[in-house]
Image (cartoon, rainbow, N blue to C red):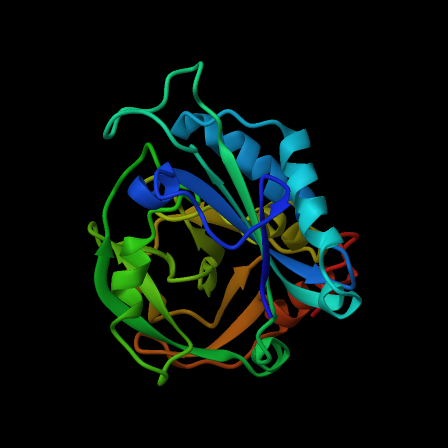
Length: 283
């Protein structure tokens, strides 16, 4: 059962004039709800407040908090235990064509939605997943790179390439660099050490990726760098995992470039560090 609020009021429809639906003019966050709490809530809020101005959207932290609390307050006790909370911030209605609303009429909308949690998350964290390599290429766009904006057609196109034979697909840029999967960030252990793709030209800078780079790798005595990763470099990978704010750290056990992969010691160490982190993320 799903539940949603718009600007703090229970609703199940959006104005036809909303710029989010018309142009993808907005951004969003997808958060894990675990025992009534959102473990990475602060990081999610910070990212929205950091990236919204790039899209010409002005929003206050208090508005975000109020909408999230309104959503959680409307959930049943059972729903509050486990689920997914998606927060969408759009530019609202107004403006003519592609022109944004004037400063006097700009009124962003905040949509908060609840969805049940997928049943396979724990199994995937423990047993790993298999990835394909998408033919569709992510275009370079340094202005929007890193932002989780509403324009997800690139991911829709890539996801259409397989049915259920793979769990996810790796996406490369038009320049041939590995960027991410259709729904998560990537970390790879190469002969030179751990690396995560640089996202200054394409991709989404996920909050779980941020937590891993800023805290978790160092907490277990490992180093990680952000760098360009080619398909050829994947052949030497000895460990590989995806990460997201909902799924956590998920080992990868097979890709076309690497063949079969064992779930390595470093990956398990990082999973344990995430579980023991003060964010309270389950593993």
